[in-house]
Image 1: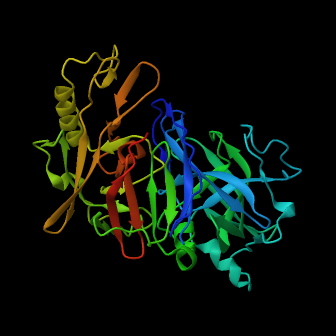
Image 2 (image 1 turned 180 degrees about the horizontal axis):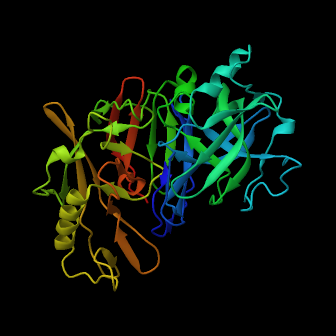
Length: 404
């Protein structure tokens, strides 16, 4: 769900493909203002990191023959979309922000198949009915999309079925968005790889080919891996929660927080619960930088963290941005999750983000008590995260990836 506010971050990590029993691709990390961009042999792929939005991207092959497309990974949205050429004659400036990578040329792919409008006798038309962001261009008879994200970015284009290459595996007929307009998107990625829980997501569409589950490691040498063959019985597992109001998000049962192993007192776990109407709750999102919590919980966490930081100098005008030069250690933060009588946890050893001299606490208070709390990507760094959509479980660890 790629950002909510603009803090100042963009982090760029590049990973390399290495194939094990699973399909693993390198991740790359980038730097830009903090982001929340979500809608209002197994493949392991390198993950590249960006810091302005603290976003991570992978490079996948799209089309036949495959054209390399760097895409931000986003567990908070579903559609895999990328910039396409040629630009329509009616729009001579499709992409105001120049791409650092070759744009997908739809004219040379032999496997691109447009999706027709709903109501057509063509069975492919069903793909146009799965999201409110999809609609019908009656004049052209094709399915179109219009995505507008919380951070002000937006993209429009047409829906098609296309082959997607992940590592050495080809996933045929994936619903994709071929963008003819994209505004306020940060280079170097050409689009977004939606890994949410919806039907259009690559995570859903690739279940037969890649196994219905994926793992990722957000670090300087991070990766995205599809499949179950590398799952470990030593991982901590906690169930996904369901929300019929927002069925595509990955909800998790957060029950508490700790700083340096000491539980933060005074936080009622009910504050993290979903209401019967589907409001509230906590989601896991790689497309958001900063973890957002209800104000009551955030304030208590902030106070405990400030106490643990001691006399470290802060940035003028800020109470949680620190000048770290000469600082020997940073307090860690642990999130606790419930699985009935058991408790699992996720610990981040460096819960800060920043550039230059100062680094800031990667947590913030929510703008509304009715919205979801979001576990952002800074907190997820350093531990293998597994999302087993088919069996409805999250996994944490056991392997760490501390090289960020």
